[in-house]
Image 1 (cartoon, rainbow, N blue to C red):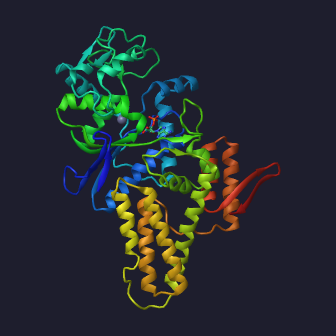
Image 2 (cartoon, rainbow, N blue to C red; image 1 turned 90 degrees about the vertical axis):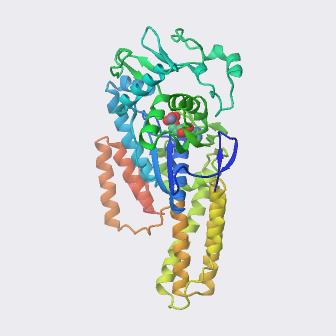
Image 3 (cartoon, protein in one colour; image 1 turned 30 degrees about the vertical axis):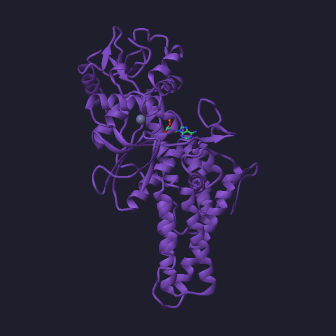
Length: 463
Ligand code: AMP
Ligand code: ZN
C-alpha cells in the first residue's frame, strides 16, 4: 500500500509502527456553527481510509478532536448571550447528527480541547523548561520557532521566505514576541472569555497545542497517520510538529495526509467567504449518501467543484448500484441452488484493492464497483445459481461498505407512517425545533418520500 505523504512529497510505502495496528489522528471541526460540506470532505474521506484499513485487517485507533474553545465560538456565544460551552455542545451534537447521516462512524475517541487543558499546560511547561517557549509580561506564552531546526519541513517553507513576508505575520498586540515567527501557546484571559488557571495566569490555550496534546495522549508520541484538509499544512500542522517534536525529540507522525478543497465556482468553500452549503442544507435536497458518494467520486488530492450537475450524476450512479443490490438480493432468494460460487467476480475486488492501495484512489475504486454492477446485471440476465448470485452479492456489499455506502435494504413506509411523521414535523416546526423538523424531512427523504411545503400545507410524494 502506498500513501502520498506531504512530508516527503511522494507516495511512500505504508509500514505501520506496530504490525497489524494503525494509529490515526484527524483534525476535527471548530464547533461554532453547523458544519459545511467543505468540512465534510475530510470527514468522509478519512472515514473511508479507516474502513479500508480495517478491511485490510488492521486494528485502527482513530482519534478526531472537536475544537471547542476558539475566538469564533466566543463571538457566537456573546451574540447569543450564552456561555460558550452551550454553543460548542450544541454544535458538537449537530455535527454528530450530520456524521450519522453521512454514515461516518464515530472515532475511537473524540476528545474536546476544554477537557484536555491540564495536558496542554504540562506540554507548554515542558517546552518552556527545554528553552522552546517563553512567557511574556502579559501572560502570553510563545513557541520559539528558531529553537526548532526542523521548522518548515512539512510545508516546504523556510524561515528566509517567511521573513520576507513577516510584516503581515506581525499581529498587533503581539509586539512582545522575540521573533515574528513565534506563535501563541497560551493567551491571557480577556473579560467575558472562558479561562483556566495556569502558571502564567488565567488564560486559554492557543489552537495548535490541543492537537499535539491529544495525539500524544490517545495515540502515543509517534503515530502512523495525521490528516486534515490542505489548509492545515501551514501553519497548523507545521506548528504541531514543532511543538511535539521539540518536546519529545521524536517524529509526531510518519504519514501526513491532506485532502484538497471542496470548491464552489472554483473557490474554496468556507464560512468566511460566505459561499457555503451546510450538510443540513444539502440533506433537504439529497439523501446524504449521495453527498458521500459525490465526495468519493474524485481523488482526495484533487480539488472538487460542487454542483447540482455532479450531485445528480452521483445520485444516478448510486441508484444504479442500489438497484443492482436489490435485484441481486431478489435473484439470490429465488434462484435454484446449483454450482458453488466460482470467484468469477473476484477480479473486481482486485481492481478495487489496487485502486485503494494506490493512495486511496476512491475514484478508480468506484469504477471497479460499476464494473462489478455491470458484470452482475449480465450474469443475472444470463442466469446463475443461487450460490453464484450470493457470492456476487456478498462482494458488492463488502465493497460498498468500505466506501461507507449503506447497503441495508430500505423498507417502504406505509402512508399512515408518512402522515404521522409529517405531523410530528409540523409540531416540531411549531415549537421552533427546526433541527428536529429538518431531521424528519431528511429521514423521509432517505425513505424515498419527498415533501413540498405549500400554502395549503405539506404535500408529499414517493420518489
Ligand atoms: P475548521 O472547522 O475550519 O477547522 O475545518 C475542519 C476541517 O475541514 C479541516 O480539516 C479543514 O481543512 C477542512 N476544510 C475546511 N474547509 C474545507 C474545504 N472547502 N474543502 C475541504 N476541506 C475543508
Ligand atoms: Zn489539529
